[in-house]
Length: 556
Image (tube, helix red, strand yellow):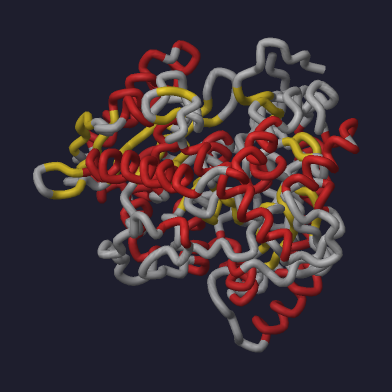
């Protein structure tokens, strides 16, 4: 059921008399440079917007009590002729698993970590502060980045409650960077930052009609981020446009010759495809599509989308877009991941699928749960005022406070299966090292050499990108990019029959973000601007679940 929201309660406040709803970073910067309003006034406007809209969307866990003071200092710098970057005085929101050494918490949405003190800002926060961006608040998320359960309410955390999709609040905004995307879509900030292991930037961006740009693993620093799987974890921007996301990427990227973590010692990533100049220099219009060459991975990707009866409108719309891309002068051909039957589940996103079956010891989940257990222990050891030292402590806390935390199955409506994925992670602590290394080598090889890189090769040269659906295929293409640690961008295309946005993704090989920028902005120009959130079903109070419900789970 879809019902309309009363628009008056959700009207975007004007900033010093100026309409700033859907304003881009360059537009806001232009207003600031002309003294149409100050950064402090801009922050006040966004804070008022959060007060009005967040009670319904629950995208923001907490706001920064120092935001106005920070903005005031930046205004004084501007008055004295010092403008740091295009982000000078621009407010942003960051996911709550990214450490900030200030008066806000860093908890991954988990009450067990409330009150802990991080040793310092995450590297990404340092870069953004130095660029002059104003940290406005912490975004809600699927608790512990969707790591704790196999069937759960997407976008829910014990600290933030149920984050909702501003286009239709009866549906989830995607996870796990749900609040980062939905806060931007709701005009609570000018840009936002999320993290991804597998789909956690792509899906929320796709379902909120914003741009999500997931960099190659290693291009942006994850220092100071509550880890999930360092071999797959990355940080990326959400923007209203490819240009906005790219402006942020120019600030936060820090290319290294190789990924400097032990987990990539098996397969090094080449950086021969270096980006000349700034990423923003690669922004383009639709005429850049003339002469471009794209592949559409068919087997188990577009093939599944074509047969997905519930996603017919999305598939048809994406096919129409591909026709427009071809009419703009691009070549689009069917290709395949050679390893598709081994690592792409025919039933949709399934990180336990590997070696052609679910539950394989060669699956992505084997890698993730091993790395999560080990690296969470390392992260927790660096916190102050902390009584939580191991994953076992988190599990025990959730059981002790199960009425609020859902540590026991069927005791909390957001977590019908309790914390069953945490339980599986605990099993990995005693595994032999070679079991983990074998799984890591397998998913890397099958998703890179026998996956994306093979699909990109055409007549001795590489295609300009792989075009993929984000939702109509069940999320499987996105998962291949995640296993590989390769970059991806999503561009909004339309709204489906339940009022939720959808888009198209582009996948490239390692460190080819500049090509994602070039062709993402070209497709964005071809598609045109999408509609703003309608806030349908404003009074929704359901829990929108994801995952496969267990046969005997009693939903509360």
